[in-house]
Image (tube, rainbow, N blue to C red; front, side, top):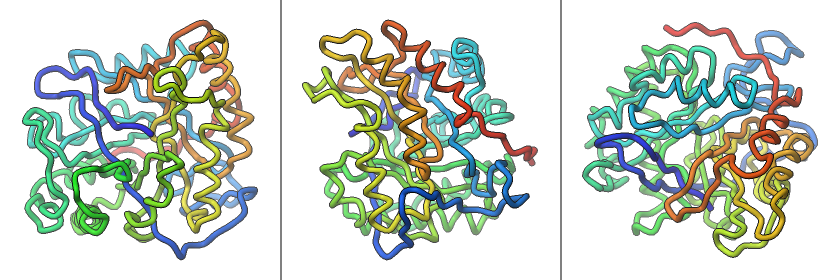
Length: 349
């Protein structure tokens, strides 16, 4: 299982754990061998991304780069890119529902970061500096319509396609709220963006990907009309939780196959977070875990983007790219042609 946690922002931006969501039945199914590529292609047979930002010929290579204390994103991201020898295709950042900088989409230099990268904005139903949870039923009842309208206006002004996720990983929620309340809140947000003309927002619905939770997922699904991408967050916890070591394929593929076999094969998948802890005995295993990614990914053609979570979680599980040869093997994997897909040239509005 995993968390959407924003760590390292100063002042009101606190580290937080976010949550998980789920899915419904009755969708198109297909075998896992031929990917479905949603969205219109500008040129038939082209490898350019579709209107839904889906790369037909491979997958996006991304990372959550923890911001430093001054909250500037571009310097931290470009410094990491220099280390790995390539530009990241996609980055993820997190926002609460406050009126502060913590909540505002495209805060600070996010727009600059998006000049040649895809932005993935995670929106959480919390006020971080007050440690307050916002009830889904209150969002659904319209109490946060002004916040929704303000965010939608900012995204519309930005102009370029942007991925937006609301309260990912709700399948581990223990607040007593219901799937129906989540769906109502999710739809209120999406409808608000659409009414405001923010058609460039592409909606990402997410679950933990923790396979024992699979029976929970469908209940939270808001419907195909409200979902452009599906995300999950697989981790190889290993020594952190006394778990059995799993390689990348073992960590990721069971949930991938579940989505392909249970009516969700028409939606592109993204790992909104992923990573591995260290092996208890083998100091080379962590590097090999990342080195194996390209070949494993080619067996999962509907998995269209992966975002490494280069951080430590609230339980001090360390998924950072540290240890012997780890950063080098990650960089090597990212140079595979499968992850060298052409970006769309879509200027901001």
